[in-house]
Image 1 (cartoon, rainbow, N blue to C red):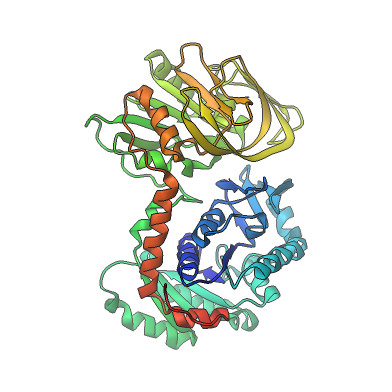
Image 2 (cartoon, rainbow, N blue to C red; image 1 turned 90 degrees about the horizontal axis):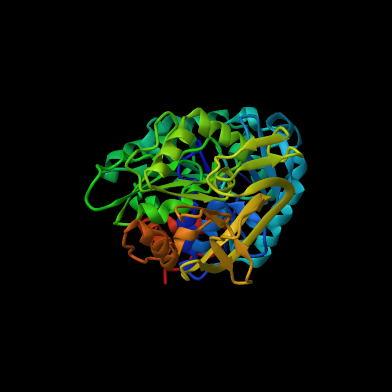
Length: 484
């Protein structure tokens, strides 16, 4: 089990790299995370949902994702509450304190999923959440030491040197953990080192001396990690200067933005200048395309959108001849109204939409979760997935058709505003090229899956030399094997 000294120390990337590394050595490997919190999720082939990181780690293992890989997923809907997904299915919305009080009741389900994966594989690589040193959260824990001890899984603790104070983080964790939890840790790893590794030799020796844990290696700064889908944070790079023949595509950062990794393929396009627009900033007047992304709470984010003044910016953009695309919750927002009579996503009520598409949405308790394939109106093939609550009635101008013949989405009469429920449209090279063509942008036609797979290979190759792989294998209880 890979645990960390905090959130965002690189656990997800290291697990993905180790999954590919051990898969390359001929092991049947499965990823596992007992409890995840993220609004970036993936749909499994059997119609469940799990955290995006575990879907990526399944790719690294070269195995299809399953709901057992992330049996508990929390999807924040507000600052104090989240939708709870158990084994891929919505189990309700819980307030944070209510979840803290009842999460221990989910441990049998978590262990059942873990045992299922154990039975299918030589090796399960588990990712923790946050830090085991957050001892105020230890009672009822199912994400870190609570799981590790219940499942009797040895732990390796990761420290992030890029943040600084990595010696204090690892030694401090040793100091505050109770003896039984501390005994689960077999060694430590350092992540995100820049420069000459020998410069931190004394630091690694100091950690080993203070903790008694084995030094299992130090990973360099992994540039390839930027090509992997992010799960918890949007990378806000400085916006490039306009010009150079690029088309400008922008996505407003909604307060409950979801599945924003689906824009990674656009970020990689040489002909596209892509930017997320943070709250407090206007939608840029030179944008060619504004994409309204998915959201975990459509009506709340409609209010948020208007509070930023983005509704005024968006209508001005349309008047100038700009194009708009809405995806999932963004599609719902573009319509005439969004009604939530049962309070599925928040307080019951109805909100006026942005009025750019002739559609109306009613939230329903049933959640649609399914992989989909089909063709855009242009004829280009796409594959993606649906993940939403709500049903939308539309005018007879669909944006796309599924392979089954069912239509989805809507297009305005002038063709400049469109929306649909399908996530992942930009990942397919052919579909992305068709969506960029009306903007006058050429595509490189690369499939995002290929880019991601190559990045995982690069990370695995770096970890081969950075980590003590034979000792990691022995800790995990598998016989060491040479790389293929």
